[in-house]
Length: 482
Ligand SMILES: *Cc1c(COP(=O)(O)O)cnc(C)c1O
Image (tube, rainbow, N blue to C red):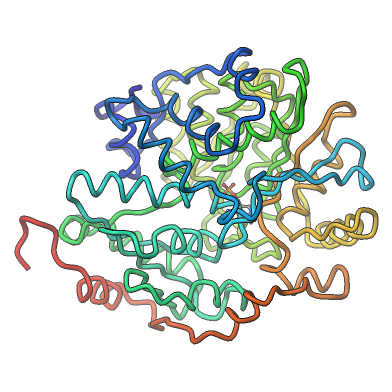
C-alpha cells in the first residue's frame, strides 16, 4: 500500500511513514494510491466480530504486513477497544431515537476516557505511535492547540507512553469547566498543559510559529496529532463498517450516516468506507453556524473564512474556519487529478475561495458520493435536545444535536440513519441545562475529577515562552548539540 500526495508531489510513502508525518512534502495531504475494497463476502464474514477484531481486519487493508506486522496491529486493537475503556462490549452501542423521527438511531462514539468521539481513533493512535517510536528508537514531542476535545483525547491517549510527551495549548478560561478538569487534573510526567491568555487562534498561531522554526522543530522532535493524521482517519473508518453491520442483518440493506462536522475528519472516514464498498446510502453532513462545508455541498463554492471570523457557538468543537481534511475528498471528486487540486488550493492557501459549481464532477457529486448537507443554529440545537429528550428519554449533547437536527431534515424516508453521537452531554452541561432545565448527572468519578487539583502553566501569548517550556523538559534529539 503506497501513499501519495493530493498535490502530486513528493515521494510515495508507507503507512508507518505517513502515520508520524503531518502534511505531505508539497503541502498536500497523503492518501492511499488506490483505496482497498470491502466485498460482499468480507461483510458477511465480518458480521458478529468483536469491534477490535473488525478494527484489525479493516485497518490491515491500509497497511502492508512488512511495514507494520498485522499481528502487532491486532494486538494493539485488542488492547485498545475493550469494554473497560469504552464502557461496554458493544464499544459503539446503537440507541433508537425513532420516537423522535422514524429511522433515526444514535451510534455512541463517546464512551471512551474523554467522552468524545476523538477517543475512538486517538486511543489506538497512542499505541501505534509508541510502537513505531519504540522500534526506531525515536522520541516525539506532540505540540497542539485545542479548544477542548482534541487536546484531552490526545492527552488521555499519550499519557505515560514511552518516548512521547504532549504540550497542549488551550485558551485560558474558555473551555467548559468539565473540559478544563479533564485535561488539567492529569498528573502524568509526560503531559504539559499550557493555558494561553487569549483565544484559540492565539494558541494555533503559536503552534504554527513553533512548527515553522524548522531548526527548533527538528532539534526537539516536534510533531502533531491533528485531524489530518492518517492513522486517525483509518481508525474512524472502522466504526462506519461496524455501525453498518450492527444496524443490518443482510448486505442488501443500506444505511445512512449523519455526522456533526468541523474539520471533515469524521465524515471523510465515512466517505472512505462508502468508496471501499460499505452499502452506505447517504452521508449527511451537519454543520453549526460555521457552515463553510454545508455551503460547499449546497452550492459548489468553497469559501473558508479567516480563522478570526469563526463564530463562537454552543457546539464549539465544530467551530472551524476551514476544513483541513476536505482536500482529500476533492482529490477523489476529481478522480485523482492532482493538478486540479493544486490549482484550487493555490487560491485557498492565499486566503481565497473556489467555485466548482459548473463542473460535471460537482453536478454528479450527490449521486456518486451520497453527500447531502445542512446547518443547525443555536436555537435549533437547543430545541432538538429538548424534543429528543421529551420524546425518547435520551439526553444528547449540542454537537450530536446538530447531527440529529440535520438528519431529521435530510435522512431518507426508508432504512436506518445512524447519527454519530460525538460527545456526551455532561461535557457541555450549560447548554443542556438551557434545553431541558437540568444538568446531566455526574458520576462519582466525574465529581471527584472536578475537585482534583489542576496542573497548568498560564502564559501570555508568547512563542518564546512556549519554546522555553518545551526546551526545558525535552532532551535534544540524538545527533544535535544542546
Ligand atoms: C471534533 C468534534 C467534531 C468535529 O469532527 P471533525 O472530524 O472535525 O469533522 C464534532 N463533534 C465533537 C464533539 C468533536 O469533538
